[in-house]
Image 1 (cartoon, one colour):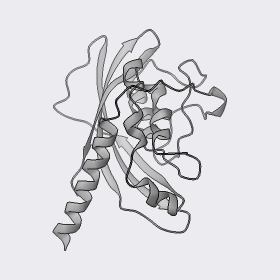
Image 2: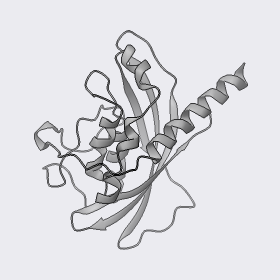
Image 3: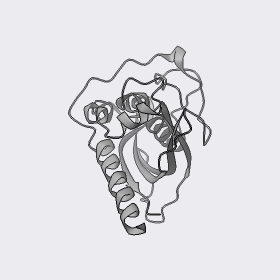
Image 4: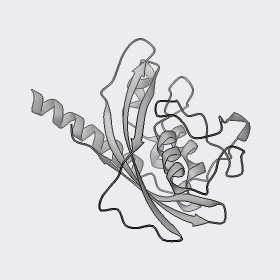
Length: 192
């Protein structure tokens, strides 16, 4: 029984990773509403509100570490009581992406778990922390690498709890005119 449950969890985590990583196929990035933002980096378990425009007060894109942290927090901010679909979290995360990555959002609209989450009026509760990888390449003047580990659990308003997904998100950031932005990220499920 344990092996079968573990296999299901691993398979579900891989499907989720493929959805997030495959978020391609060219949709236009949304316009951000700076008035709908709580400035500053999110706390480890804080629910992230819609991401800010690059020039919104309270956001500093001069350090790649917080930019990766904010991206991960936004990616794991799904809330069925507020969001119209699973792609809304990705759209919030686009404020922390470069233009090329931000334009790849259509696959993020598909998530097989969404209907279950909606039935329970669930939102993701996510705890994240910095992850240090000894094999991480050194930063250059225009490219940096950071990683975050996140444990996300869908929790319903009716007391329902889904299984906790633990993943490491590896960010490749590039420095541009507006500061650091995530140019690529890789989501790797962590085995229990």
